[in-house]
Length: 331
Ligand code: ACO
Picture 1: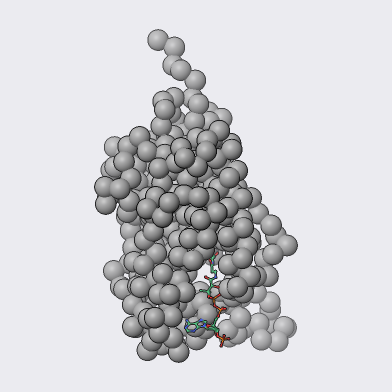
Picture 2: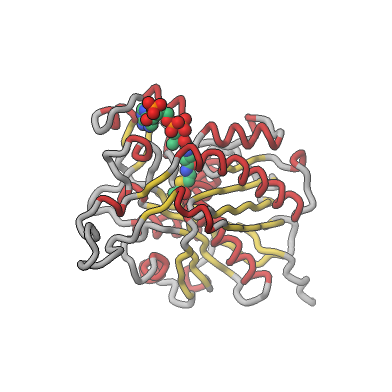
């Protein structure tokens, strides 16, 4: 029998992993001048997971990937590519994906990281989908993972209340059925990098004043500006993914937005005219986990029995760069 042409790629397994250690809003009240009331009202976050000193991002990623492969009934030797959206790997080099490959024994794969901040998982999905639909590979592990609390300034109440650590993974396979990635799109605007960035650990040199032992290496953000751009851009990106999939918002069962801030998500959902009960949120439990946010939410929703086979999802993310990504996925 002649095999039907591959029309798209499909998510066949999901998995996630988070550090054990919780940091609640009450804990943060002991660290900076803030309150549970302020954090809850302004962000929707109640607690987040943070890595201990000896925890490693590679370990969460490996656990998340193993869970996704079990879910997909796929062996490590079948994986052709490992793509990890992250900006906070354990090492400057080699990549996080390289360490995951070795831990999983996925020795037939090539492995690389993609640096696209909070849009990292959708960037990785875009590239894995393109390679699968081009027939270059058949099975990929697509991860989003961050240890942003390692680059957080714990004296800056504007940012330290926001972030949490996590890893999320999906197995992506060639598909010729109804389920799959119906559209995926990414974009960036490098003119706005100054609104959200983290300098390299040893940027500068001994010849440049303050280049060592400076607090300038932490994540820096102009929160208000980021907020405005996030709403506009996530709306635009959502509409683009719908258009590429030839769909309307009424065709969507769930919106899976990057869990950046409940107010950003509510503003986007209102403009998209999607009811609140169709917007999946878990920011109260994990905070903003950047690139891990969407795969973690998909896995959470599936385990909670909310995301079901046959449902269609609109996923959208926005992050430093600025970067953005969006996808319509049928499960
Ligand atoms: N506790 C108490 N007060 C605080 C805190 C805090 N943790 N943080 C700020 N404030 C104060 C400010 O100092 C300010 O006080 P002032 O009026 O006396 O100056 C007041 O609260 C209001 O500050 P704003 O910055 O205007 O607060 P806003 O409503 O904008 O909320 C926030 C701030 C939560 C950061 C919001 O702007 C936001 O979510 N921005 C987007 C963040 C985001 O989505 N990032 C995404 C990408 S992350 C990535 O890519 C890595």
